[in-house]
Image (cartoon, rainbow, N blue to C red; front, side):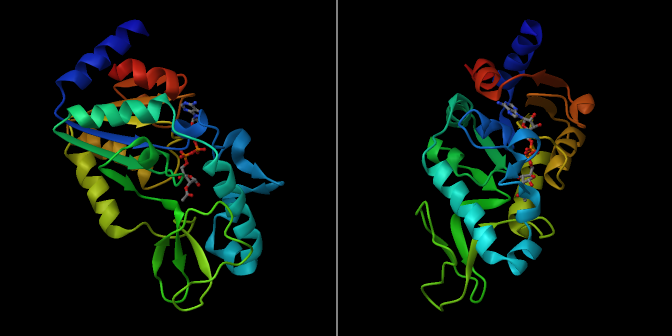
Length: 240
Ligand code: OAD
C-alpha cells in the first residue's frame, strides 16, 4: 500500500486539473450515518424509502421528522481531516472541482469553494408551491414548515430517489469529470447514477482515477488506484 500511496501522491502533485467526487463515506467519521449498511435505518424505516417524493406525498410529517432528526444530528457535527485535506488541495491547484453527493453541508463548512452539491443541501428548503429556495439553518423546522412568501408546504432542497438532478449542475459535473488530469472518488458505494458514471467519464477523458473507500465497490476494478480504508486517514496522507 505504501508504494501505491506514494505513486498516487506523485500523480496528484503533477496534476493541474483535479476533480474529486465524494459520497456519504467521507462524512462517516464526522458521525453522519451513511445510506447503505449500518446507517441505512431510522426508527426501522429504510432511509431510502423516506427519501422519495412518494413518501413525502403520503406522509410529509414523517419525512420532515426524519429530516429534522438529520438536521439536528448534523448541526452538532463538524468536518473531519478528509474534508479539510480537500480544502488544502483546492488552494494549491489551478483547476479544482469538488462534486459531492452529500447534502450535509460539511464541505462548505470546511471551506471548499468550487463545490457542486449535485444531490442538494439539507440546509436549504424549497417551497412546493412557489419553488422559492431559502437557506434555513434551524436544527428543527417543526412538523410541517411553511413558506414565508406564499404559505406553501416546504420540502428539503435535496434530490430524492426518482427525481432528476439539476441539469446545469450535472453538466458542470460531467464537464469537470471529462476534463481533469486526475479524479479522486472518495467514500461512495458507486451504485447511484449518474454520480457513479462520472469516474468513467474521467477515465475516458484520459484521467487517472483513484478510489478511496472502506470497501471495494462495483467501480474498484476500473480504477487505476483503489485504497480500502478510512477516508479520514488515507486522504490526508495522499495530500500532505
Ligand atoms: P452509501 O451509503 O451508498 O455508501 C457509502 C460508502 O462509504 C460505502 O461504500 C462505505 O463502505 C464507505 N464508507 C463508510 N465509511 C467510510 C470511511 N470512514 N471512509 C471511507 N469510506 C467509507 O453512500 P453514497 O455512495 O454517498 O442520494 O450514496 C449515494 C446516494 O445514495 C446518496 O447521495 C443518496 C443515497 O440515496 C440521494 O439522497 C439522492
